[in-house]
Length: 595
Image (tube, rainbow, N blue to C red; front, side):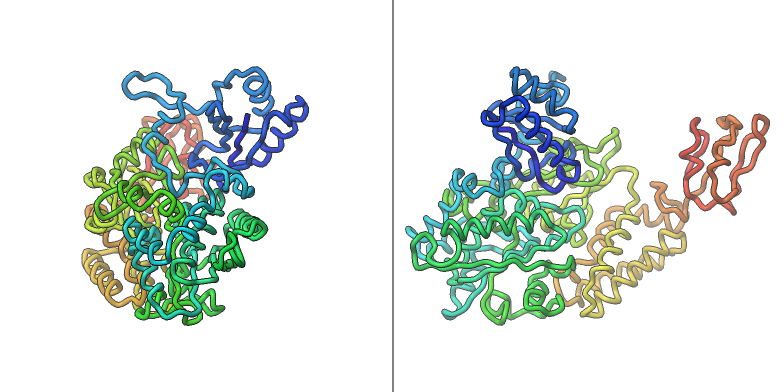
């Protein structure tokens, strides 16, 4: 029997390490330490239900496990073979309304097809032998012994794999460009600088399957004629960094990284470069400057990195998810990969579901899956029976899509036509309680903070956009201001230096297009329909519901509430009210309204 404990960042933050320690101690106490193996794995994807403990071969998943639950799991399941039903992950069949216990039929997993995530939550990422047991390093062996460099590149081109980091450029063409450069020093870079708010796909792959990235970079190095690679990962990912260090050390020890790999003439080495958390370093030219020890700022292209990259040498840059597909394409063939997805978007895509969604977590679905399937069937819809309002795809560079867009098949071209983009795969869901003007302001605050400042349109233009959004949220906006803001968005898109600057206005443009009525309500009616923008709120006590108890007055820090206990309904002086909401939280009778 194997007990798998999620040791990804999400479950680790919920004390899965304490669950692991309790399992170790409990099995030892029962004398079962030699009969049952405990394995620390990467992310299962079900972040909302962590810590996760899975027991194989029974295929039972336990959710929200605490150290206090461990004795019951050992005594009942491990010792007596009886599943602990109160902890078991279940689902509800929509037709029969009966509980589903089969992990393969639970809606969260039923429509997923795992390629990039195939080993996450399955193997111990700190044990190279577990990776090898699942055909690890077979792909580099096949490439080195059965394929020429040109054949590897042809296979990548035939597969139709496109970059999963945002732009969607064909991976095979990028490799071919570097391959055609004159022989000499070349480099391979893994872009693990995942900076979008709410995105954690690359981090989870690095934490759960680091050897797949090492193997993929070796294949890329062999294909283009490179002998050295860099993994550029942000320092805020300590678990990923630690597991990469362990994986690189193990690969070298096993002769799978370094000189004469697998007894061939091919030599390839890797080193880590830690980023300081600058969002702009996700842009490939800024990332290159950072690796070289310079300030991370973009440069004009061409030349493209495949021609002149790090240290001025031909360099290919792929993000983590893109590389995670490479070993499987080489092993199973381009035709297999190309059979998944749509005509122009092959394979699968990993998405990080966040925001107002029942099943927060990581999912991998075939390209062409609709937004509705992801949000409602896999994600479980918005919690607390709230109405879905919008989904932001592509992070700060993407845009908002609404109910009318939910049946759109997800691929690069479809999302672009709707004014959004695939991006790295962040998918933030918003419900009826979200103010879309405030959402645009949130993303613009992020962009202003993260702008490198090299070009004027991005450095100053985004700052002006934020000032305009603040005016609108504070009730100081006008219809003329909306027109000025839209015009500025297009000027920034046309004038910014890099892709990040070009896409910076997208959250504003998409919310203006999809939710113009909310903007008009802010500037004409001076009201926030979602009751989010603090400056536009007013608090009122309904005298018919007021119990004259004074709880609200006691909690008001501004002394804005007056009344007589037991005799007179309380009132709020709106000139003194600081709109903190303390009164509303204190009232037990629903007498206070916020408009």
